[in-house]
Amino acid sequence: MANKTIPANPNPIAAGASAGNVDLVKGNITSYQGLLDGPSSDLRSRLWSELVTRDAREKNVFAKFIGAEGSGSPIAEKRDLAAGGSDKVTFTTVAPIRGQGVRGEDILKNNTDSLDFGTFNVEVDLVRHAVSWTQVLKLMRFTGKTIDQLSAEVMSEWMSRTEQDQIQFVVRQACLKNGGSSNVISGYGTGASGALKYVDGLSTDIIQEAKQALIANGGEPMNTGGDQNQEIPGYLFFAPDAVLRPLRSDPDYLEAIVSADERSANNKLFSGSYAKWDNNIIANHNVIIDTARGRQGSPLLPTFYAYEAVNAGAKIETDGDTFANFRGAFVNVPGGGGDAIGSDDNGTYYILGVNTNGKTRLYSYTQAGITNGAADFSDISLSHVSGKVDTNGSNTFAAGSLFVQANALGTPIGYALAMGKDALYFAKGSIYGEQIFHYDDFANSGNEAHLSAVGVQSVYGMNVRKDTRGRVPGVQLVEAVRQVPGLSLTQ
Image: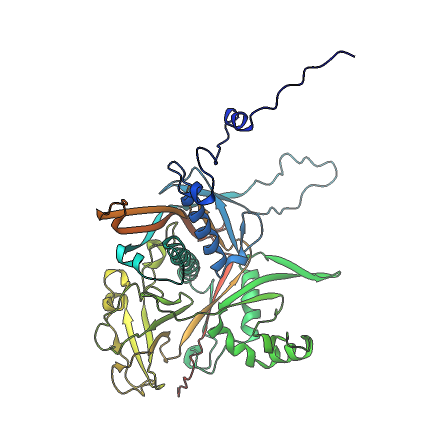
């Protein structure tokens, strides 16, 4: 047998380089820190962006209900890596066909049905935000956290909060704008003309009505369940916990949990979760009042928290976009969810002030009294509504008071969303969660500027899905009573 020449072991680094691979460990780099600090490496920035993007999605209350196009989730997500600012990402809708067909030897070519489809574009645009600090911050101690860790935490929280608030705002406003009654369930209270009173909390009847309204409007189920004899359409019923809370007092719902749920510490009454009803997945959102300067609550639960004593008779000077979640406000959401929806929300609206001692006063406002896009309460003119739920007796409210959206009777109100599959389209462009920097002022010997800033920029847009008939089939907005701790109203 002839001797064979065994080739020398190839140099893996040289082979990788010739194949177009990038050698991350090169030069004198011997540690992970050295890799991050390498002169030509952007690995730190990429890791930061990935951390912020993933963390933001996990914090989003809709995270479990967002899926790829065709997944059947209530929110369909699609990314077009070629799309930049002001470009459009295209979704396609197709209508089912009907007709009788032909029988026997009848000719089919003259009796075919046409393929009825439509393209639905979601415009994407560049959205940016950042947090800044000076060198003084580096002299402080933050439980061992680095500037990268701190900035990643606050930017991921901002991304998740902005994303979930914009989703709620777009869906809420689209329902209110789209013919009103076809996508809104309201007027089922015991007050005059069906106005909600504080005792008219959410019930199982309303959940069932919302599901039937979805089906009647063409909303497809996001999942199915049932037995061998039938299929039961499954939908999502999403609401803040302050709206869902009265459901626990509904006799039918309470009896179902007591009788059908397991008898253990995992029972829904003890665990605080909500059981399915009529195959609707009931998802609650615990809206927490935090210390952020800006909007509180959510578009489904508009809230203003007074961090200091205020005079509601005058324009309330506040810091940030504190009015953004209230009706009539303008929120600039790319993709058709901005001015095209927000500016159409005209009317007279009401805000109930709830003092720390439980005393109340009702106020009204109109779009004519809103300036500068209604980003802040200092841009709103509130008018006292006399003779209704007025126990406060003045416009003075102590620090810690709440101001909530209300109806003309003074009833605090919130909103719930009944959703089927593909209720909203979420379009992503070429970049999402990309890290951006800014440095200013004099730098020290280590080339560290006195003023530094880091942030994220993303290209995205969102809008509700419309079918080939121009309907918004995938969502119903339910106006409901909002529970406020310690509040009792005589109406």
